[in-house]
Image 1 (cartoon, helix red, strand yellow):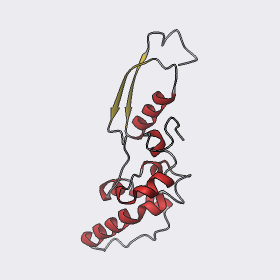
Image 2 (tube, rainbow, N blue to C red):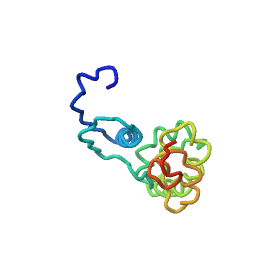
Image 3 (cartoon, one colour):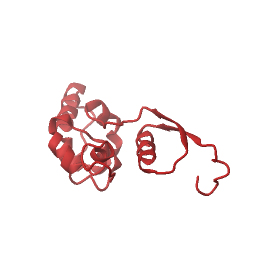
Image 4 (cartoon, one colour):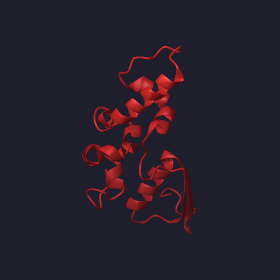
Amino acid sequence: VEDFPEQFHHGYNLLCHSQGALVCRVAVQVMDHHRVVNFISLAGPQMGVYGTTWLESAQPFLEKNLPIPPLPQFIPSSIMSMGATILASNFHSFAYGSLQNSSSLANLWHDPLHEEDYLKGNAFLPRANGEVGRGSVG
């Protein structure tokens, strides 16, 4: 935008999806002289993510980055579901700890059952949403 001011003189629209929607929203928040006319957030996790459904969608990343041994394929789905529930109930200890500085996924985790840990341990989302350190992001 700064490199081509004549092309963006009348402003521009931002259409952002998923995690990019959160990044775009925060960029617009902190940019003093942006010319965004319309900002559209599609499926943006503006207040964070939580729960087994989200963890299941992030499973490939988690298997690669968490110290959890792979489970055999023959384990019944009911036990796998129970494992996902256990992981969701303990994921905050990873998200607000060892993963916080190395994973954007950890910065999206907002565990309502561990709100104090979220506010202290999440380096991005509480600041972006004005829940701590009003006026600053990151």
